[in-house]
Amino acid sequence: MITKKYNKNWVLLFLISVALIPILITIYEVIFTDDKSVVFLGNYNPKIAVIVVSYYVLLLCLGIYWFIRQLIFIVKLKSEKSKVELMLLKSQVSPHFFFNMLNNLYGLVGKDVTKAQELILKLSDMMRYSIYEGDNETVTLKEEVDYLKNYIELHKMRYRKNIEVDFNCNIDENKKVVPLLFIILLENAFKHGVENLREDATVTINFTSSENNIKFTIENNVDSSENLKSEPGIGLKNLKRRLELTYPNKHNLLFSSTENTFSAQLILN
Image (cartoon, rainbow, N blue to C red; front, side, top):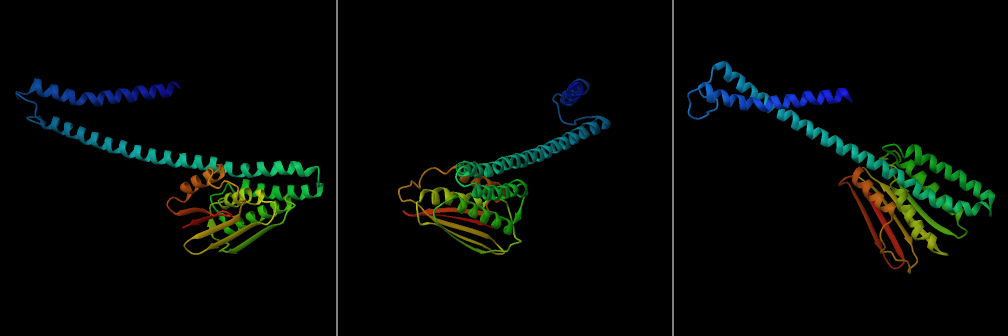
């Protein structure tokens, strides 16, 4: 603390000294020259002129250096802020899903112990992926697809009703992508579609990739009485913000709905 205060005092003294130099130069001109007005470098001693020019050159260099340092600081600050925000958004993805799953698991434990144990194992696999792989900057599309399929199987174990899931996948399995993007759309389809339908629940997924883009399309049927125009939940809001941070101007997230269906499409360029 003392060292910091000491350094600040020296910096302040230096700045005051720099600020006084132009004033001292002006006083010198007024007192020691016969000029009626102050003229820059007018009738200066050559040595004094060199000192004055050197001072202004130094002042210009310091100004440019300070300006560059400020730009670098702003860029780093913006980058760090984005990283922290992205970490916080990532941390909200998994708990949102696991909170819902644990609530359902609680009710299943007393009814079907064997099924509850299987569900716990599946859930632990998904948590492992979310914690370890989800912390990486990128993962392979194969890893993401496996995660989505585990999610689907987990939900099929929960429900007594039949769920028709058509998962069409044509991807380059080694292509890299930011983790945990597509799970939000899949979770949304189950939350607003499957869970609200007593029977004939369907989810259709088309997942493709090419050299230039990745396309994920999902469609589910819904209860026509549900209000599809309600405000998006925290999951979709987080997804939109994550896409802005990780794929700026390189993504398209589209939603459409009819009386009985809801669809979402995410394209990454």
